[in-house]
Amino acid sequence: MRLTLLGTGSADGWPNPWCECASCGWARVHGPRGQTAVLVDGRLLLDFGPDVPRAAARFGVSLAGLRHVLIGHAHPDHLGPDALMWRSWSSVAQEPLDIVAPPAALDVCRTFLRRWEGREPGTDGSPLRLLPAVAGGPLELGEPGEADEPGEAGEAGSDGGSRYLVRPVAARHGGADIGPAVLYDVTAPDGARLLYGCDTAAPLPPETLAALTGRAFDVVLLEENNGDRPGFGEHLDLPSFTGLVAQLRGLGAVGPGTRVLAVHLSHRNPPGDELARRLAELGAQAPPDGTVLDIPAGSASAPMPAPMRAAPLSAPAAAPSPETARRILITGGTRSGKSAHAEHQLLAEPDVVYVATGRPADGSDADWAARIQTHRDRRPGRWATVETLDLEPLLRSPGPPLLIDSISLWVAARLEEPDFAQSVAGLVDAWRATRRRVVAVTDEAGSGPVAPTPLGRRFVDRLGEVNARLAAESDEVWLAVAGVPVRLRPR
Ligand SMILES: [Zn+2]
Ligand SMILES: [Zn+2]
Ligand SMILES: [Zn+2]
Image 1 (cartoon, rainbow, N blue to C red):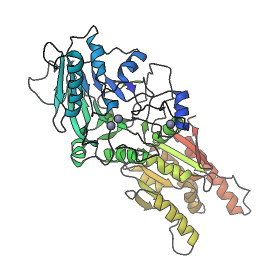
Image 2 (image 1 turned 120 degrees about the vertical axis):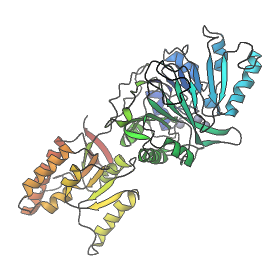
Image 3 (image 1 turned 30 degrees about the horizontal axis):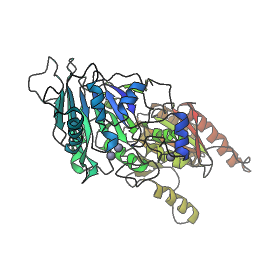
Image 4 (image 1 turned 90 degrees about the vertical axis):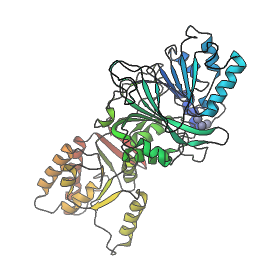
């Protein structure tokens, strides 16, 4: 499946052309985003806003091969029927074209075509076919391959056919004026599976969650209109986007290798570089308009998303954000924001085991108890907590991601044991070999004055060594300073 992102922006685009907020200023300089629309294999188009024809022209993409258009709902940024008139003046005016949309959107197309073409779609030689999209009613578009049995309603094969299997599912979006909106579950002829989740708020309707369970999509495009400013329309913001990605992971709709892309982005988001960082923490990305992505069938079950070979058709607007890493070490001083940054890395995971290596609150130290409570309040309730110094067995066994807080407390607890060196060697080996995602927090040794006691000096020395050995075996190393996480490696 080849995706061409014709647009990744909100209804008003990003920047909003009238707006002078900081987020719009960034987008104006680093690359604007038009209304969200995605071309699949040059044959199938997801959403059909008025920006589509211009975006295709700007990125050097021909729409001549387009045979199926899927529209999520009748809001005007998803539905620009005037493009059908421009098509009727082209060299492919008589080639068939399916328009799949909820009834209210089909009505808009029908009214437009009556007005400007003077005929009903499908009559008087019109090559257009209007097909209602109804949640739960699967559609087969295009021709099956040779190996397919006639009338077989199974998954698409990889036998050269051009058949797309399309399942509309209910969105949490729409209303009395436009009727229900739908999202699309699309299986391409090569078997690759895509979820197009645009537009919707959370939570998704129960029947949609049931329909998506176990689908193991290879790519998920999910709207994230509202960023840090919730409350505009029925849209996702960063926290609800995060929660929905976690839920889809929990349901098996998103696998470890699924590429999760945020679309329908507006200036309610933080500036693009900050957004890229925040999305990367969730294993998600927001590639620029014009990006071309090849998504192989079966990607969802890969250990993590394949490196993104995004080919922007225009000059790259924003660097692709980093991939999800398996071993992440986050160091920093006290109250530097290192624990919060560690937690953000795993917020989009359905299950996380929080491994506390510090001594539990026993009532003897009110300040210590308050610190532990602050950390606990910040973590999602669904996370499990394990209090242990036995990190090796956890790292060596399969299971949900681990958040280890912290390596420094582990060193402090183990320092005076006679087999300390062996414990460190075991920890580093298990860290290197682990098959789990693991984020570990540690303290940056030696930023303060030299410790006055021999034990204090020994602690700083050993902690520095352990940090360096773990960092050498980490996919990513971060330093938190004054609440700002800085990635040290890879640079
Ligand atoms: Zn929209
Ligand atoms: Zn703005
Ligand atoms: Zn909408």
